[in-house]
Length: 361
Image 1 (cartoon, rainbow, N blue to C red):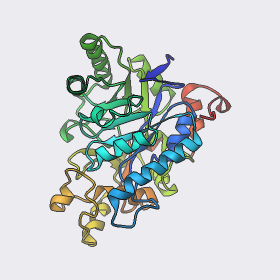
Image 2: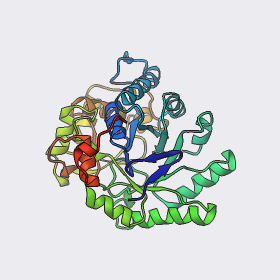
Image 3: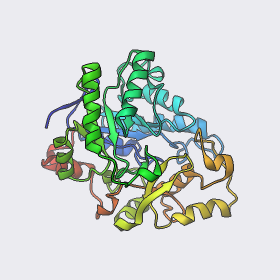
Image 4: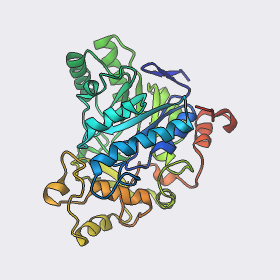
């Protein structure tokens, strides 16, 4: 496998651990992935809710304080590792969380759930931080590149191409197009690479995300033109994942037919385990729950009480309430059948003994 370089950072293994909010990929998971030689991402969305900083009313104060804690935790595990942040464009405090991530030592910012058109401005004081947008089309990559170059004289350090037909969580495609058979992830990967090569004379690292589970998937992605992979769901059922044991067990217990699409109050489709999904909405209605935090820039629940409060539904699930909480996942979550370690997953993916994986960071 070729070495993968993102900005000034060379990865030992061409793998980014996908961001999973709320607090599913926190400092523990990100730190252990970084220690094993990948990029560990702390998902910044809603971090404050299940933190020592939250008093029930101070969401926007607790969130950045909790993010600092999670970076400290990750770097205690992997002092020299590549730790970054996954930042959702759709959240209200996007600008703040990007800046705090950089101040806390993020080496990489991966950003999606909207087009991160102002990301270079937010990170201007941190030129060492690699910037990696998430796209699902060549058109989106072109739009970001042109905007960044014109306004900031900057281009991405890598691009993640996410497959809406297989990825978990919020998806960058219209609901009616997901699963239609129209989307070709690796044609998009090659298209993005060709665009940067022809338009900017750059060999842009392009990362395939969605549907990557085992070594065969990894090798297929590389053979199809990707420079690396982003994986999220596979790391949920690890000892080091920050979610509660009940959340991890939901993956182990689910069947393939239990996984499906929802429409998030953020206005984006999402993929989740649907076994108890009706109870997510019922819980908010029964309690007369109004928008408690204003976490999203646009939210159907905040504006009209349509659907449900997503950040608190995700928070409940992460704490272990998988009956009324929302469990996001990719299409392959049903393949999880036991709890492993991050190092064991790296060993399987890269065909190495476990003792050759874990390092001091």
